[in-house]
Amino acid sequence: MSRFDLTPYRRSTVGFDRLFDLLENQARLNSGDNYPPFNIEKRGEDNYRITLAVAGFRPADLDITAQQNLLVVQGKKRDEVTEGEMLHLGIANRGFERRFELADYVRVEAADLADGLLVIDLVREVPEAMKPKKILVGGQRPLEVVKDGESSAA
Image 1 (cartoon, one colour):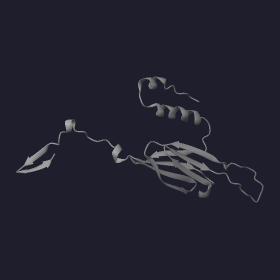
Image 2 (cartoon, rainbow, N blue to C red):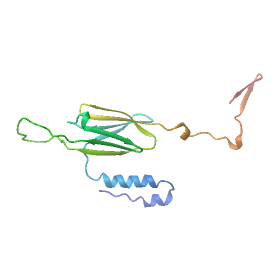
Image 3 (cartoon, rainbow, N blue to C red):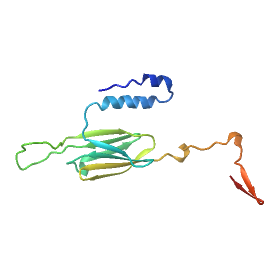
């Protein structure tokens, strides 16, 4: 496991403690198990898709929970009844829990299971109050262009 030393960045930044803690925790937690494999795709400016390979799982075996800044996907192991003697067991049928840290204002839009792939679509919706705004200095009104006795805001 490679360890990142974020101390120099912590000394020269203010207000990024949560981000650094998140990076350190993820490095510590993701040091081993890579089951099930997954992809994360950016599909647009504010759209993302997580795809997990969950062969053998049915929709009833999967539990997706979205909390503030956290998405948890769990697969519950079920007992398989086979008619014959199993000579080789190569298809994983074990339970799992996969956690994804989400940025502020990211929510789950949809989830679908097809062909052994669980697809979770995410969208970031920044509230209007949080979007950047132009601030006029000193309460000045916008300049107006005057044409033939009419006025319109520039």
